[in-house]
Image 1 (cartoon, rainbow, N blue to C red):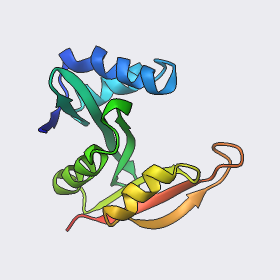
Image 2: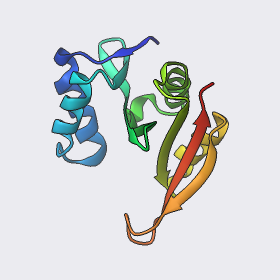
Image 3: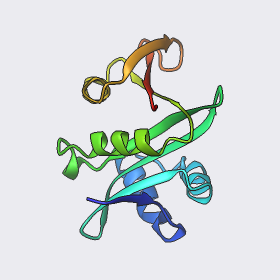
Length: 139
């Protein structure tokens, strides 16, 4: 599957996937801005968006993947890994960070499989479920 920058016409399909996953469209402005900034990557399966990734460079001037979403129908097929690999190649900075909840075993395994290293954690975002920060060098 090909990975490319999302376009304006992809916005509603991305919002629908996000809403399907979290039950809300409260991130629609964030997604819209990421598309405008060309910091939203998507993967299609046939005519459906199978996965997307959003990143920014406001994390201490380093790239930070703030969101990776894979449609349940396409999970466990390596799409998350493909997005991480692609992001490592195109990262505008030499350091790439991301995070996930300690309870998210699937995403933690995906980071480790893709040679990300634990870099720390943040308490008090989700009660009783620390956010683990991951890091990968993009040299």
